[in-house]
Length: 91
Image (cartoon, rainbow, N blue to C red):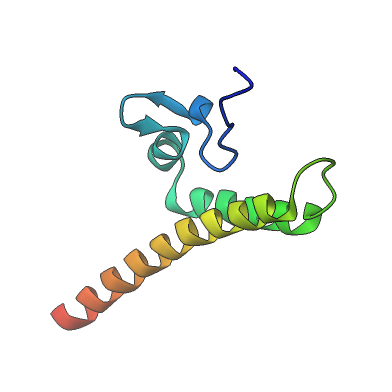
């Protein structure tokens, strides 16, 4: 990486496996819904516990990572809620 290039810590290029496919996409396909929720919760906890402790890394970076995993977890919860709501309507 050239000095002039800025590294994207939130969405690094090495997480993009090929056109339109990222590590998150593979994890969602390989893990069960419960496993993926656990993965997200584990990462939220990891970043919360280490926030401000990693040398030369701004606190905002960990906060952003926490936010990303919380959004992923919320997507699952919203999906589960909408499925449950549809079941209630059809009953």
